[in-house]
Image (cartoon, rainbow, N blue to C red; front, side, top):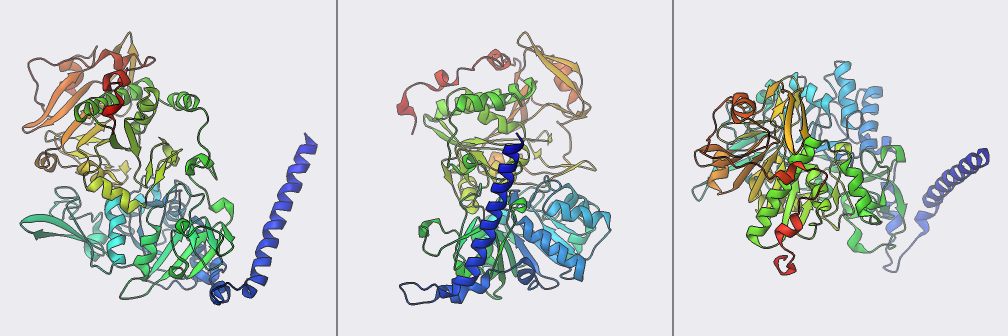
Length: 598
């Protein structure tokens, strides 16, 4: 055993020495390399490869900084850490305004670690404010905003992502129907267009207005053009072309760089990378951000370049190594589901199967965070992956979506899109169905997925775009909130102790899905819980199914703050859903005729 340990240490030292030798060699010899074109690219571009201080000292006080990153994935964590360290030692740069495509980091790392220190030290100088679509992975950023310590603005991920693309074209902002009749609508009496606190309402740095085109209402999203971009890739060649070989997604890194470079002011783009390769050694199709768009490239230590929350590098995340035993993976993921989660996920999957039987073709779906993620496990268990293509907001198609700190990546995806293109699929109605979580639902079918005062403040994430664009939207979650105990016994739901918080309420804390807009679009909206299933009708929410073992009056109606539409007869939920150790038979339900699958 000791011999093995010594061998590992020697190999690690050797690898580190090789790493140092390689980069020393690169710095010494790069200027001597020429190519057939006769242009000395390396001499022109060698100054791009610098240490973090050289790159970040170009960031001025008051800068607007766009930052890539979907949780831990493709987040330039090293650059953020070094930028904050520079501020600690020198007092500059300060009064920065950040524009995040999602959240660059997870709890305890990335922007959350910085926000924690700012909060604890009561430091109000480094960050002036932030436009952030999701604080679920940065609770300390949420506290800074909630307590009015910095300006806080929130738009959906898809809106921010596409806004970067519009700004890169030197357009004044993004025009979209996403957000109408929700908290990002400027007519919202509380949030006035995603203004999350008093500082934001006073500064109005990121703002939303209503415009009318051809008699139709749209929302117009505007924010400052970034003059600095912090992005990340895996590999850069000697002139700075970036690829994302080992990243679990592409996201918006190209458009973020373009937005910083666009008119009227040519900004600075700084990229975090993991390694350098020779110019011309890769296919040009692999380049995501061309070198001329990048001013500085900084090699980051592996400790600050994780592929996702749990993986420094897993080849299955980028499709390089397909899972050899899918059945074993499914069994492993199934262990993470409790029986109640399994019931909700299975009933949601059943709704998808019914939809497929109706449209008679394969479908494209999106799965939200939380319980909806487990629907992908049910799909794999049921052997209907050929009929249902799962997608995730950052760009993955296919594979098995991961959850927790790894949300956003998938095992063995077969395609990855740039994030604005992924959200075009959602917003444009190309998406057939979505399974999303919820915190609150009201009588009109409106949904709050993000906010409970003094407890939960996560932001919209991708929810507003996805829920609006899908033809079928399924909101999946437990009927009650808080501490509770429910079990499945003999194929029936048994409520051992009642939940402490009602989720079907008279008034929402925040509206992120509009039942009125859903009805205008002739969208099908289903609300799946373990106790009952609801459907949005023209007159409001109606109970369409009830779980075996559940008493309508005592277990459902008594725990709702409003009275839903109740038909004379309510069918029971399919009993197969509650036999969680047996297959549902979705493949047979859909039909074995491959001709139905497009």
